[in-house]
Length: 381
Image (tube, rainbow, N blue to C red):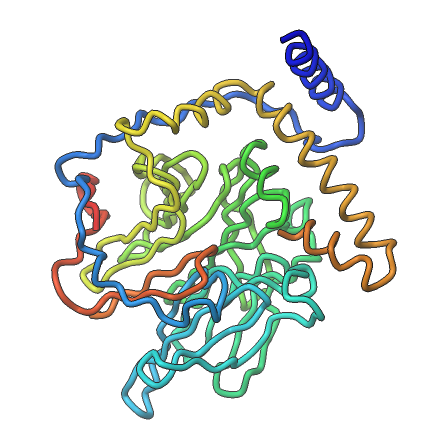
């Protein structure tokens, strides 16, 4: 009993020491914040089996298809489906979903887990002219001609935007006038997910004007700015704040132009956002949060107590620094392990940054959505 108590005390002392060591992230001051009240898993949000008919494609062959985009082929009158995966590849789904082809890679690397060099395509959108807009977590905002495989960098992650370079480009959207809106999730890169999760709200909504090549920050202090979606009339844009369990609206036009507000609190961590053909908004929830699941209160304890988040971040940051030093200074192949450790209308497509497959739902049954007009209501798909 004494040994157990001693180990507990020693562990607490070590954590406290790490928490006050200089030169280790987070460099910003952490503050506490409260999550919105959890939803009840009842009524429209009751569990159902509407997704049970999903077909899982390429199981074990691909990893992390984060986003899916359909590109119209006017010449043949069909839509072609594309997704981006871990390792930097952009895939075209062919032969009715039985095969895929690699049409491009956003980076060049030897090991697919070396995301800094491989690239990590996250959000994908059509530019309306047959090209794919890509938000790559390490490369920036890219434009791909899927026919030729030509990639053009529109916004480079190495170029500062109003004082700092983008650390995690995540999602992208284009307006009818060609202006591009995109999210920079955090001051920490994708492989430092714990830092982004427990750190401060440092995400941004950015507007890129292709005509001038300029980027302007529209919103700051977003808690992991994730999915993005323009309204049907393009008078506002909605951004998913993943770790605040809410959607935030930025008004582009009208009497509220240039202001922000909470668009909706949602039952979990929102990721990608898309409009349905009817103009309603689809919100993908990474982790659901309901009052019936008390285990999630552990996360709320962390958000309510900044010092607990600091203690949680520091050991991770110290470990990552050591691993990255090994990846930098050890010769190959000895650096391989540390490198891997440090970079961690009918048919509906379901994508996930973690799944080792891509899912699609046959066109049957209603598509129940988060409505974007009038009062905001929810349905569980």
